[in-house]
Each structure stands twice: as C-alpha cells, then as structure tokens.
Image 1 (cartoon, one colour):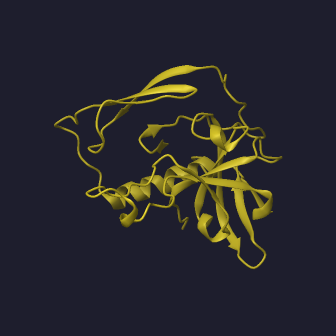
Image 2 (image 1 turned 135 degrees about the vertical axis):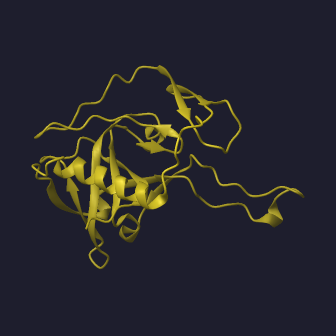
Amino acid sequence: MKLYGVKVHIQKPRVGQWPSSLNSSRHHGTAVSLARSRDWPVSVQGPHHVDFVKVSKSGGVVTRQPPYRKSARISRVKEYFYGVKEDLNPISMTMKMDNLQIYKVGGGPKAPTSALPIGASAVADPLRITKVTSCSEVLHCLLAVSHADDPEQLLSVNVAGFLYVTDVDIKQNQITYLQPCPGPLPGKFLMMGSFQVYFE
C-alpha cells in the first residue's frame, strides 16, 4: 500500500486473529519513489525516521494505464477480504459513526489569498490529520485499523489490517463494513484511504 509516497507493508491477518503491533521503538528506513513531483531527497523526522530517495525509471518500464490499475486495485482488495480462491468469509459489522474515530490525511483549510504575502500561494499541509464526521465520506472506502494510542501517532504507528465500508445510513449516522476476522477491533483509531473501491 502506498500512502502519500510512503510504502506501508502490512501482514495479512490469519483467520480468526488480528496481527499484533510491531515493536514501537525508533526505526530508520528508506522509501524509494518514482514520483516526479517534490524536491528530492526528502527526510521526515519523527518516531520513525524515513529518507525518501528518487530513483529514475528504467527505460524498459511500461506505464500501466488507469483502467488496468483500477482493475488490479479492486482485485487486490477482494483478495484481501475473500482470499485468492474466494475461500475466506469476512465479517459484516454495523457501527454508529459516533462510536468510531475515523481520520484522513491531507487537505484542511487553506488561507485566503488576501491574507498571504504578495506573490505567495496557499498550500494545504499534505500530512494534516483531520477527523471524518460524515458517514457519506467513507462509503466504498478502505479504513486502516491503527495501533496508535492517539491521532498524533497515526502517521508513524503500524496498522493491524483494513476494513471496507459497504454501506452507509445517513439518517441513522451509521456505517456497515467488512472486517477480515471476527471480534473487536484491535485499535480505536481508523485511517481513511484516498480512493474508493467498487466490487462488482
């Protein structure tokens, strides 16, 4: 999974259990990106120091077209919940939005142009953490279940797995989602992804 240029590797939970949190001590890692934007190299300080290194794309690499990438993404999500041979049975749960703490990364309010110095442009913080309060925002989205103890740790702490929101009830302010195994969620903070997946 790639989240804002950072590759996040998670372990598929075994049947009947969520994976436990990894050691939360300080780590140093390197993320390799083929993105064309940003200034390189980039370092991110925090509990887990990460260096971003830009690598030139090889001449023989073929860029995958958006329809193919969309289809592949849907297939990977379905495999996560139902298995490669569709022999897994995810659990469907319904929960009030008031009982969940869902956050997303990026966005946030921009300062009006009139309040900025001459020649400056408003830029939203790409790592800004904002809480999701409307259930309509999470329909068909993936929610990462974080091991974080508070929202400030969401960008640096491992995730246990993912939920997929299949339905929302705006009147009742509740959502229905799939989780890969039964039992309570291993964390109370959820991180919403930036794309939607529609199962056929």
